[in-house]
Image (cartoon, rainbow, N blue to C red; front, side):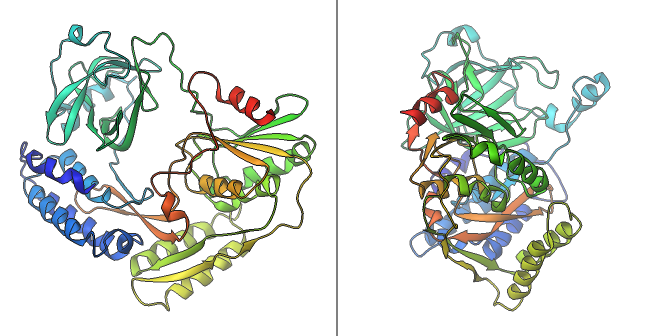
Length: 476
């Protein structure tokens, strides 16, 4: 992210608003919090990178003096957060949803600063029709056709291209408003970083949007495409089990959230005998954002073929991180359905250990012991795990275990790369109430997969259904 800063020098010079709380205060807060509490700070700010880090901070401070708009300040803070190779850590803009079916709510929303100040650009669609599929310029639609945008070259501040609304099926957007801002990722053809304004005009950052065969990211398709396929996605939020044929079972696991533990326990127990009765098993974890490793661990016995060493895990000890763990403990103590007494006791003991450690020190949670089960199941004898770039955190823990298995293949695309640091504590920034996420643990081995993700054994394409492709690979 250090390469972005020179392009910021012309950013944030407009819309200077008088306000009691300034972006400089936001930046100082975020910098101070990360320097004190981020476990990856020492990994990312080394003797080799210290100079570029200090240069970045100085340039951001200069820009913060003239940052008036909330969105301008958010972009500036995002550049700071993205300096660190830590996908779990983030900054996000919280805002209320708007009922676009309620005329009164829509009218009230259109009086807000977020709507009124949205940048508008006039473009001629005729000049951009029928552009080649892998030319970023052109006309795009979401798969549900809610938005139609025109992406055109438009250098301003950081961005290289801008996506402007042509048509919108929601009244919260009007033609001409800027929906998307893109910039080339250095040294990567067809890959862009992006800021996208969501339905309610809040701003979200995407560190990577890939243009391939007329599809940008996961949800934008050139209108010249006859068919719009997103086989890499599985948007279902429900667990699912079904028999695909006489030899193959399929399990869909959309989350490993600790708040879904009771549901997952019931699901696993109910289908365990069926899984053990057939030679082939497909586990679909597309879009599984993770949660609790313990909820993934129940799948381990289906893929296990021998002992393997787990990773070394450290907890970063600071007063703020201890405070977050205490808040978690209080919350979990009240949820007796999903958090048992053994887990709570272990957490209490860890918090007490942290309180005895020096400030800003790493406390060893795990020495990377051997993982060993009592037996290897005869069936399933072959397992395939379908993954995509939204498989993250605890979902990726399952992938690491699968890489140790002789009977398991990973299929799909690279995972999300949320593996080097974990356990995100959240705090609200003092001025604009942005959500600042900061990790509290780090992993010795897994850190090399941070951001880049875990590669599949077999990369699937977007020309046919991923489940069909997986079935063929599993039985070859």
